[in-house]
Amino acid sequence: MPTKYLLLAVLLGSTSSGDAALSIAPPKLELANTVWVPRTIVWEQPFPQDAEMSGIQYADFSLLCFRSQQQFMRVSSYHSRGRNDTILVATEPGVSVAFGRYHIEPNRLVVTSKISYRTIDFRSAGIKDQVHTDTLLLIGQRLVYQGIEYRPYTKLAGQRIASFWAHAPSQGSGARSRD
Image 1: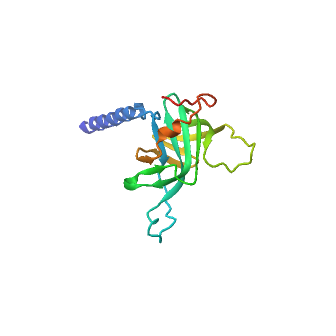
Image 2: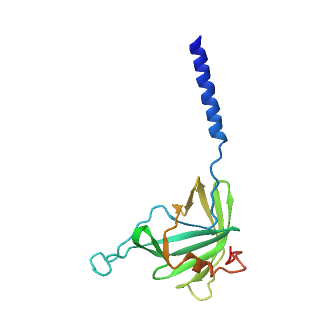
Image 3: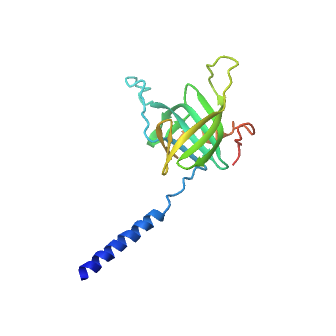
């Protein structure tokens, strides 16, 4: 008889702790004032035999930047690797910056943006950048953009992210240059 009560107590205990685990909501993804980079970056070393340039490493990827009031910015460029895992932002040969807005939906983040600033433009004259919508998957505290998992990142150097926000249009895409 005591064995039955012990089994009943264990069963009830496991059921109630399971219910508690189900009722705990995952932490809400906070995007305001964050910069995201790919979780895995494959750095290339273009001149390994050159004594002066052997330390240069670069990778082509986009930084995803978020501010309050659902403001979004994407900085696409070759970025360089600095010391102590630092990323040097917007290196050669050029940079493309898109501004827009974002909103969070269940399991996804929808971003609408338009390229507003570009240092090198190889497009034919008369071709304008159109508004572009991207859907990023939300998996817990992770973002997946164009099939690549992104993570928050704070070790940025070189051109400051704030200098890119200074190019944000005050109207049009809805992004503003102030928080």
